Length: 180
Ligand code: ATP
Ligand code: MG
Image 1 (tube, helix red, strand yellow):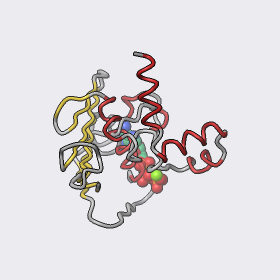
Image 2 (cartoon, rainbow, N blue to C red):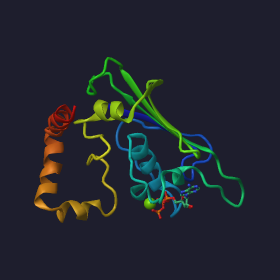
Image 3 (cartoon, rainbow, N blue to C red):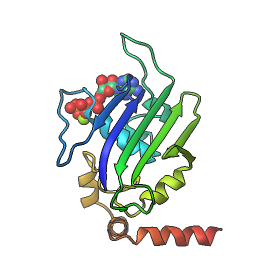
Image 4 (cartoon, protein in one colour):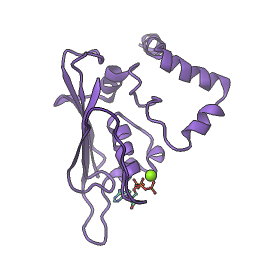
């Protein structure tokens, strides 16, 4: 599975629609301080279902919506889409391309779509669980997180290993079944 593109609109500093196409190989994002590099990574975490405003450097989730500058007014909607090439069917889906979209309005209304179909956060989680790309996954490691992994309590470190080993999915299914 490969990351194909990221489309950001009204999210943090990206007021205008911005499309990043990822070419084969490694991609580096460079730019001056405050130019939006971390915002790009946060857009990726957000579209995958990040639920913590604090982990997105805000206090409430609507803080991710473009809040305006001296030059232009605030916007009312943030929208991010991330597209994967799934021709190897690494993600358990018949689709050879998977596009996840998340939208959030200032009113608090929000939605997810998988290939254009309205979906729940849970559907997004289920699709990516055990691919290493989930919301709590370790394929995106932010500044400060490395230290927290090293300093984690044994039970938390075990959770990390279980996620990497692919056991997490079965535990989550078991927890759900017990609740239902
Ligand atoms: P550094 O090199 O210092 O890590 P960076 O390239 O990672 O910088 P970011 O942290 O991604 O930069 O971007 C910070 C910028 O994003 C700031 O100028 C901040 O004002 C702007 N920003 C963050 N949230 C919003 C928002 N909701 N609306 C408008 N601008 C925002
Ligand atoms: Mg940064």
